[in-house]
Image 1 (cartoon, rainbow, N blue to C red):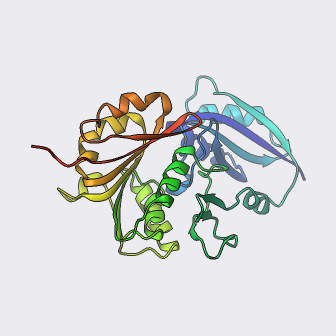
Image 2 (tube, helix red, strand yellow):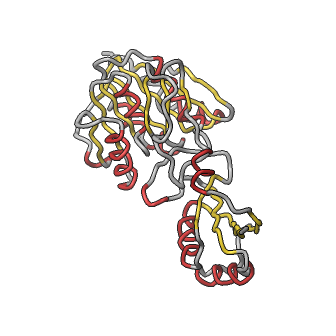
Length: 296
């Protein structure tokens, strides 16, 4: 039996509200996907949308009335007008199988893989992170995450300490530890992200070597050999003092999540302490630099 797929577009703030409304209207399945160019690994519990711009889809029986459903959704969400939306007729399928087949292992550098847990890691001798996709998981990894993973893969991390500021799913801290780092702190303002990070760490055999905290819980004066911040340009500017102070003299600061056109603006807040090297991938950038020792 074919199905009707109702789809509408929302910003991050309302995506989950629309998803809940579709479920309340009787959708057999609800999914969220990137409506722009921002695919990500799972960063939140409860299928929380991870993107600024999101498509929310609900699957309904073929005899449903799309107009009635859209009208009811507008009423339930107090919408004067519906955002962009459409309806699609989809054939009957083994939805679990189709969903799982979308995801493949991804390699970063020469020896680091990210692999869904139901697949066999391609290289038994490589370093593999098991990371299962959820509904807030895109079809691939965002360029900034890839840049950070590839940067980590190139480093000699043995005995190093790591701070992952804005850890999301915990993927960068977990990667660093599996690549040889001694200890890591994952910092995030979102309690859901910290919970997901813990789940992912447990799945990957990571225990007490990873500490997960809200920013206000970070011990005063804590410094690490490498500080990673894969967030947005605005927070990178706002946190410049805090991130700089968290890097040991001679340690590395890695900034990402910013657009190539924002490199100059962001780097101005760090030039007193760092000489950055930049890497560009498409529209996105990564800055990495060693903290200079204090002078005078």
